[in-house]
Amino acid sequence: MIRVAIVGTGGMGSVHYHNYLHIEDCEVAALVDITPESAARSKDWNLPLYPTISEMVKHENVDVVDVCTPTFLHKTHVMEGLENGLHAITEKPIALHKKDAEEMYAMADARGRLLFVGQVLQFTKEVEVLRELVRNQTYGKVLDAYFVRLSACPRWVKNGWLFDRERSGLLPFDLHIHDLDVIISLFGKPESFAFTSCGNDDKNYKEHYRFNYNYDGFNVAAEAAWYNADFPFTANWRFYFENAVVVNDGTKVIAYQFDHEPHIFDTEETVKIPTGINLPPTGMFYAELSHFMNCIRAGKPSELVTRKQVLTVVELLEEISQIESNQEVRK
Image 1 (cartoon, rainbow, N blue to C red):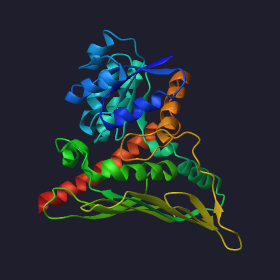
Image 2 (cartoon, one colour; image 1 turned 90 degrees about the vertical axis):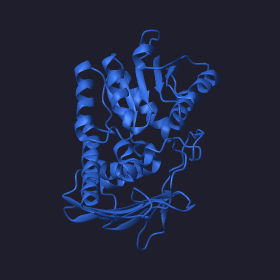
Image 3 (cartoon, one colour; image 1 turned 45 degrees about the vertical axis):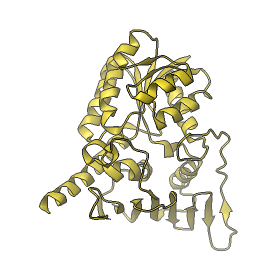
């Protein structure tokens, strides 16, 4: 039985808790949080609550910490868990700086523990299909690809940390990171990249981005936005292969070819668990956390969210953030 301590009992902590309830040979044993709301969670879930990981391990026998705190606290909590001899799972992004991420992995190595990053799209049926099409060249080589991830500006955040570059990394680290992780996992680090961004003058962050990642022989573009409007969440992608166009329209994955009927891939989830946040019931968090539990049992790192992949994503996002910071200084 793998015993988990959830660190951070907000939206993502709740999502993870409810998914652990469905995973065999795994149980949530404790909570770590200091927010006023955490006491209610502790009572509702009938779990002991502690102010720190170090205090928790004095009283509880756990194997892994699952860090679901705001981005700027990820490194602190992951390092505290590893220092106490626990495996660690952290929500994305692992950190806002590559150096910090490298230090976190180095601590895991030094302690003989595993570190996992919750890049949850890797555990969706849609990305599973895409991964196989790209690797097997089912329709030939990739010629072009385009990702879209758009939403209304988040209103759930408290204390404004999500709109502070130093604490969240802003939209690139919070939203675009999902698509960039898929891009890097499929194709590796791009030869070069460029981006544009825009936003209202009264905001201290950009609201809309267009990214272009250049590879040998093809480009991958991506669009991401926190709109100042009640815009419905939209996430899709389109891949142009040599012999087909494959589209994820947000509800299904379809391949279009000449002289063939459109082919709809089977992306139906066998497990759908309510999230409790602004996402419909889904099986992706269950698949993600089940995978991490299996990795811990096997004593092996994840092959779906690799260290190299995670570090490359952070490196690129950090460079994007630095470019924007320099532009703001010049103004």
